[in-house]
Amino acid sequence: MKRLITVHIAGQRYLVRSDADEAYVQSLASTVDRCVNGLKGSRQVATQADLVLTAMQLADELHHERERQQDFRKRVRERAQRVLECLLRLSPGAAP
Image (cartoon, rainbow, N blue to C red; front, side):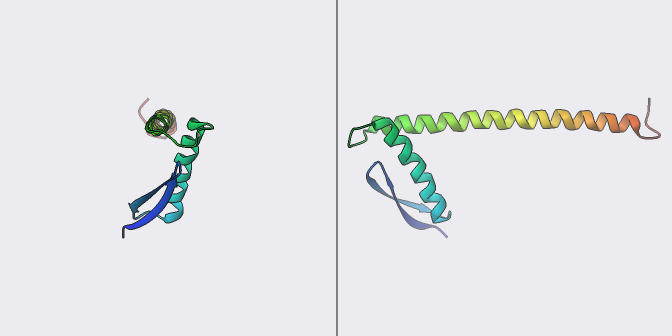
């Protein structure tokens, strides 16, 4: 069931409608808030550019993580295939 959750990012209040656990949504907002605050430095107010750059940074991290995950899955498939081939060679009645 979707509900409204209040989060604060870069000093602004946002209402988020989500069916996710509130602690999880707050954790996401906290991550974004830390990234924005890191970009704005000592300025008091985050600009739209800070928010866009934060979104780009998080998208970049997501992209790299997906590439790592894809590479990992490929290596697991290759190793599983090699194990299967070894087992087939060792099994009695397997074709030479």
